[in-house]
Length: 386
Image 1 (cartoon, helix red, strand yellow):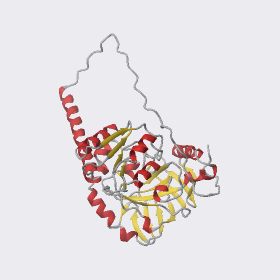
Image 2: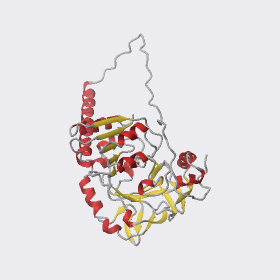
Image 3: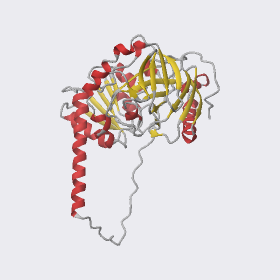
């Protein structure tokens, strides 16, 4: 395993190695032989059958409603536009619902089921990449995030507007952050512009032990993650509702304690990250820490020696703006919850950084306090500015 904590020199801009493998095959179900003896029939009370049918019908309607919101409101699909929906075996119900809703607006709708990836930031298979480059709209509900991939960057460069939904489940698709008023969220995020203007130093603290300081370029705060993705070259997550930026490389120092969730899993023991000059130099936190070391160590092995430490770049900082989002163990929704903050480790090239490392994982803090210069933005999880 490559040790992430042995510092090396940085010569030149890192480049991501090409990944043309198909990740993993979709396994076929095994055939179950039928025995000669018929099993005794199980009698289900009629009331339970009715309840089950009503529940399924209710979920179908909720799926349809959410899909229409995504297609009509969030993406504002125009008639005749090319739209590609990319899902994997874990999200086929969502992919089908989006396909059905999109087909009512355009006759150029394509649904692709790709093999499930291995980690966030992994490139999709080459055929999917090629299809993404030919679309005006791309929606990607997948188990692992495609947001920070070359494929998405190229599709956006070619003029597509893209919505990614990493870790999306049927339950998440029909409730919580997806039920928010995205027009209102867009308004609230837009009103943050004067608050962020000319603020250079960010300080984040928490009762759990976080105390970290870093610089930002105030012009580079991203205010487009509001759920409305209706213009070419726009990129958003759904559910949406966060403000985020690239920490200026080499400026972050201190301690980050992740006490909410890490990589779409609620933490049972806080993960402690020690930061020096913008890189993670130590990780503590029981089983989660061991898993982090392993995942990022494996990602480092795929890079050239002089680039390996870049996998430990603190790539992104943001805070939630969606009042309907919940802390449920899914980074897609956790980092949008109003009053939370998050840090991401790994690839920062989507935000204009130089760490092209092929992995990008986020950890969410439950009740942070956030200062922008001398302005208190969030105090112990309570958003103060409106």
